[in-house]
Image (cartoon, rainbow, N blue to C red; front, side):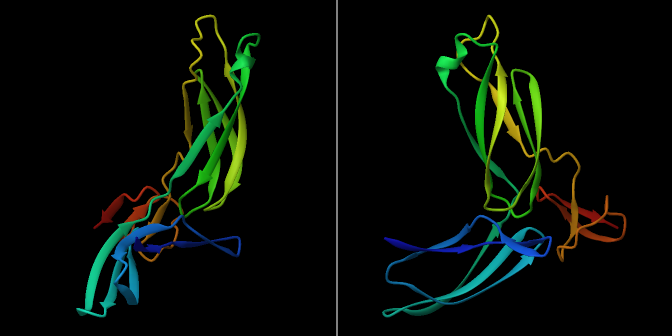
Length: 185
């Protein structure tokens, strides 16, 4: 068995603190213990330095880097028997926010129709949504679907994590919610 080190990114929304899904930093063997750890953000990258010790070999300082990303996870559920006699089948979509920022809209596309759900889904929260899947004459029992976070506009941040009102125009380095970097000279 191994010990794992994890980190989480915090965000503030309407005066409350939230944290992202944990991201694994390192795996330590059973005979190795964590003595100290420090980390710093560089855009969406967390750089970590940590000191490990064991009784036989002393101490070592190690470094690692992980990247935080806004992401959602989802699963669907429906009753296949509802498809036989219906023009539309209600499909339950469970969406989890595994990112570090709130998700304010979830788009669910089924059978070419998109349903937008206005939500405030904080990091580590889950919501159940319902969308109707159209059943046509050539329906083969398979539901093709797509679930996205509805984020159309890039949200840009300084490296200090300050959110910009629009596109970056002043000199500096910026990151957006997808982890893309932009340098303005």
